[in-house]
Image (cartoon, rainbow, N blue to C red; front, side, top):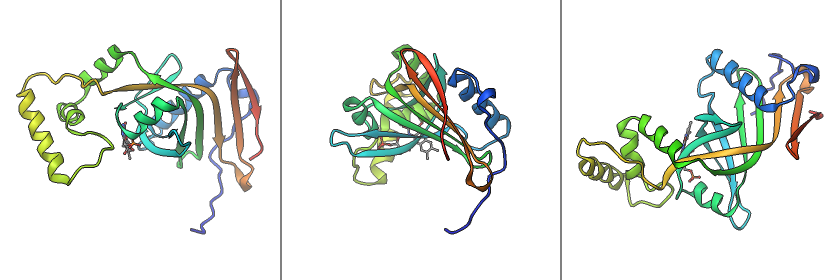
Length: 208
Ligand SMILES: Cc1cc2nc3c(=O)[nH]c(=O)nc-3n(C[C@H](O)[C@H](O)[C@H](O)COP(=O)(O)O)c2cc1C
C-alpha cells in the first residue's frame, strides 16, 4: 500500500477549459472511450438515507440527456429508497490510465418513462428477465432462489416480449457542481471546478 506514483499524463489550463462543464465532460468521456479505457462508463454514485448515512456503488453511465447523466437501476433498490428521501447525490469517475477524476454533485430524478421503455427494449432478453427476477438489494435465502426466480419469469414471458417492470428504469443526475482533476507531477495536480448559480457556471482553480 506504500507505492508512490507520479502523474504525468496531461494538464488542465483554465484558459483552455470551456465555459460549459458538460462540454468538458463530453470531451473527457470521448477521449476515455477513444483511448480504450476499460469500463470508462463505470461511475460511483453516492446517496444518503434518512439518517444521513452515505453509501456508494458503481453503476454504468448509459446516456447524457440535456446535460444530465443517466443510469438505469431498480427503483426499489437501496439507492432507489435513498433517492426517495434525498435527491442530492454525488458521482465519481476515475480513469487511472489517464490520471483523471471527475467529481459531480447534483439533483437526481427519474427519467421520463418513455426513455426507460426505449432503453429497456434495447437490453438483451436475459437482462430484461433479470430485471423481473431480481428484487435488487433485498435479502434472499440463497442463490438457488434467484435462479428459480429467473426460470419463473422465463416461463411467464414464454418467448414473448418482456415488458419493463415499473420498478426498473432510469435516473438522471442534473449537475450543479463539477470538478475535473488531472494528475500532475509532484502532487501539484490540476483541479478546475465549476459551480452553477442562477443558470450561470463559474470556474475556479483549486489547490491540489
Ligand atoms: C462495473 C459495475 C457496473 C454496474 N452497473 C450497474 C448499473 O448500471 N445499474 C445497477 O443497478 N447496478 C449496477 N451495478 C451493481 C451496483 O454496484 C450495486 O451492487 C447495485 O446497484 C445495488 O446497489 P444498492 O443496493 O446500493 O441499490 C454495477 C456494478 C459494477 C461493479
